Length: 276
Image (tube, rainbow, N blue to C red):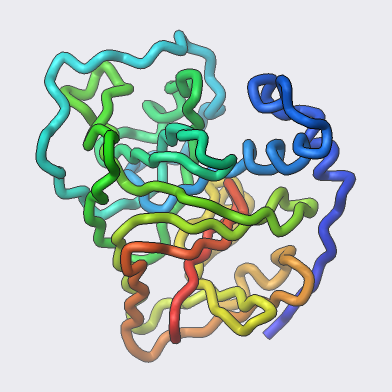
């Protein structure tokens, strides 16, 4: 297996900081701008909604920024989310820390519909990213958070369902592939990697293993195939981390247990810690 180490490149971090949104920089002590800028780039997406087309439009498409009000009342009992194919999420920043947010995903949106959404003030978008394993979801219980939200007028009802709540995190650095972080996310998900499929893992300096569960569509467009071994052999990781891949000879279940520990390279790849 190829393993690669990479030291974070602060020049990339400075470029990100200079382009950080004004609302993150306004009134912020200068020493905090770098961390907030890195976090602003993150999508802490854990599950996804499906779309059958490849993304062709920029996710920053300009349309009115007000949220479409639903013509039907949000559900009062938790809907059962369908198995995701693509991660496409809207995340509401909640302010406890720079990582904290409530995460909604759309099971009925197309990638084009998602690209046409501009996140309202206080919200960010994450995705689209391909979800690699088979996934089962349970809607979490988040105090004060609606179970569903409406952002797409042409889809009846409230199409964005409550997926998860990001609680906290730690920025690990930045390199030419972007920022990296470890995040803690409240969600109940079950990932199943089937026998005969390829499992991609990164290993931290304590020996903890993280299984790949989403891949950014830009990587897919560039020819990266998660169905092949060593597909991510050149990945840039925190100092001392390594990468491995193997073909499974039996099914592997990766459970979140209510609190998932996620290694995040936003818009690139997401990896969940698990016990082998």
